Image: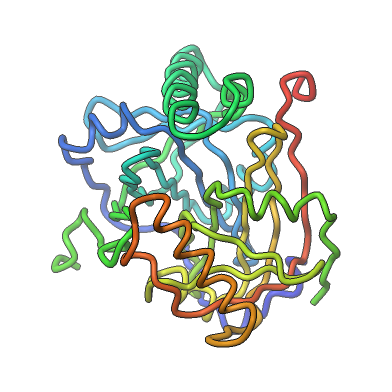
Length: 179
Length: 140
């Protein structure tokens, strides 16, 4: 399928820009959010989806580490190494509070104990929230976020509000009046 | 362009009320990940996505028609990943009317009445489909 992209109409560029710091007000959100999904695109401009098994923020709030399970590894590393773009949308199920973090790939490697601990906390939150809001079994909820196998570190370049509504898509950081 | 046939097993997953995930990419190559309230089965080779706001997703697929869609079957312990291609938009007709009715029902159930307004039904062809078996035993 990749070969069928009309590359003439695309002006593909690698990830670039100045790293930003996640506002402190979003730190509690990242600790209570209940689901996340990442996006990459390959050398042909074809997007790919990757379910996130855990996420965590560096102490300086400029770098995020996201892990994926084996099922969502296809196209991930080769896309990151081609152009560096990594984007992750994180949502708190229930209130629908949602943000998208776009950034530049730094490195990847096997998931470690910190990723596995973050995955366990996410699984607990997800199971608690989804079983209370929907008619879903606890076993199914516990299986939803796959055990992490690979972790990606990326520096954050932009943050967008994606909570449903007319304001969805507004850039939060850097502010939209700053180029 | 190659369109594949989706298995019938996907149909109920599209209608299960669980939000789907869509990744698109601008002409400049910047990916965008968003959550969708509705994916509609058009026929074995096509799905329709709700276009509710003039947002990045809408701009992206008009620049670069390819997208990656993930729909979840929580009780079936599975995800389905579809590689899709934007074909055209419909602002009237049976697909639009059915999606508009479903959107209103979803909005009402999630406290979002008045926020979710269908502007168009965006029709995509399905170019590939992959089932991810999420049963713990399948992941060993």
